[in-house]
Image (tube, rainbow, N blue to C red; front, side):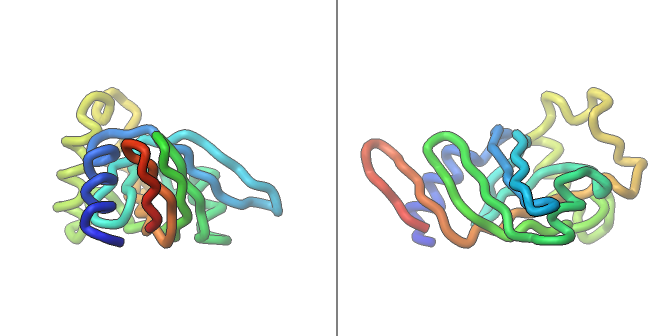
Length: 135
């Protein structure tokens, strides 16, 4: 990915962003809207390990994402418990990005199944100001 594309993705999705996340489960596609933040080639979400999306990712980690004139494919992976020592830096950034809703009862940091989902982009297409960019 070029620096220009990375900068455009950061500009567009570097804060709390709603994106569509598609997974495969039981031979069927499933899509849902998630809050995500783009950083350095990946989208990051806070979710629950026992959610349908994480159960589907455990069986097939290939996912698709789209939002605001961007569509792409990636690899979904759990980084583990949001409060794990190795996740403190990324978790701190996500708490700030998601501050508008993070502490409203939706996120339970006392639950070890509250995890960080990373979606590492493998390819994609971004449109910005009339120009098409490929990852």
